[in-house]
Each structure stands twice: as structure tokens, then as C-alpha cells.
Length: 140
Image (cartoon, rainbow, N blue to C red):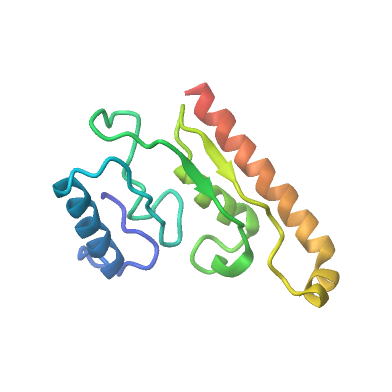
């Protein structure tokens, strides 16, 4: 891992999450698992779990899943719904299917009524960013 993941210290020492993730990957390799479901930390491009790329031939990413993207990571992932979406989209790889969960859900009815317009705007931005990243991957 060349870049520290969000949440890691500014030192060259790995974060707790990076250490535990490395231990999990080693355990999976030692056990020769056929399939592992890996959940990300904050998720996206700089997450410790994002170690697959097109050059990995022994291990292959079979599927990426992007669950609901919300404003809960504003501080850690850039301060806008667009920057959060772009960071989360970092798990997308050329030729690997992506499942995107429903966006703009999970709030109480009162909160949904109060924030309905913001949700529509956020959802539009999320999908725009995800489409842009997918288009960029295909152009590579």
C-alpha cells in the first residue's frame, strides 16, 4: 500500500485497520479460500481492502458492491457528496461487475420529508460520478 488509507496516521506506520486487513488476507491465502467477501473501511480508492488491479492474475476481484452513499464521511472523504462518490467509486475495476445499492434511503420519514430535495440532488451527483468513473475505466 503506497498511500495511507483514510483514518491512518500521518506516520509511515500502518493503521489498525490496515494491519487487521493484512492479517485477514493472509489468513484467506493460508486457508486457500475459494471466495472471500471483504467489507471496506471507509471504502473506495485509498481503502486498505482495495488491493486488486488488472495486473493481479492469481487473485481476481469478482464483484464490487457500492452501498448507499451518504454524507457521513464528509470530513474524511473530501467534504462533498461528489468527492465521497468519487472515493467510493475507486473500488470499480475495468471488466468487474458493479452492484450499486439504493441511494438516498435509510432516513426516518420526517427526515426524508425535510431533506427530500437534498437527497435528489445527492443521488443525481452520485450517479453522475459513478457513470464518469465507469466511462474513464472503459477509455483506459
